[in-house]
Image (cartoon, rainbow, N blue to C red; front, side, top):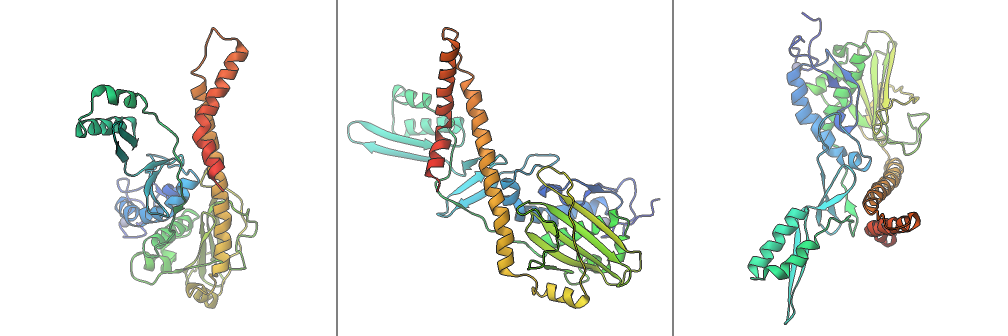
Length: 374
Ligand SMILES: [Zn+2]
């Protein structure tokens, strides 16, 4: 029998119900895991209720920074433009209309104008056949249109609206569970974190507050780096265990995990670049008196102008990263497309010329979009 109990339901941890719990949810890029922390049932429950809500809150950032999970595909993100048109955005940053569109304009004498925007070539084919039936068109008149069906890069005509919210009930619990997991991984008994356990098990108030003001707790911050970090400072003299959690370089939380800690002073840090999983070295200063903690809980150290600046740095990085990624994607695709055209009757130079033309042809939607962009 192991000496460990589930931190949430007190069930004895056994071979059968032990789990590998990600310290920071894998859905937002966390890699490190912990065993002997919570039981399998609590792992499943908290994953479905808390971690999935956190993942939903941060989904736009996961898509913008191309964050991959250990297993399984990243589901496409549903986004809306400012005029309310819905799209799916995929992991590689590309978009697809949520609903296909079909325009049929009947013209006098000459017949019809048909324009179709479908999600797949098969769907375009089926839509064309639908039009053919509905308007009783001949097979020959529809055939050239079928041949024109092509997969094209697709760009939005207008900006997307993202609403960032952080749900204190669920995402907040996920965050505190992560801080508790890191404390446990660093040798602190999770049951010493009385305030965290009380909040997670509905016996106490939330033990955290949002923090963003002139005094940045990260002393060597690289501006715009979308890192995740959890830092635990267990202080023997004051009996406090304090935690600082930051996700994506802008969502910053200070938590008081314990106010009656009797153990040794201990500092534990886990900081990663979620895009690569690489651990990073940062310096954090975390010391607050109970009075200051109360002020943090009352939003007194959460200043809108600081939040705007932190968020702005991350968005700038997200936009430049998305642009770079899109350039690589379309350029590699264009080269692969052009390489299909190789004519042995042509000279080397003529073939190069032909391929260059094909590259430009394939890049057209991308270039047009660049010209259009401000
Ligand atoms: Zn449990």
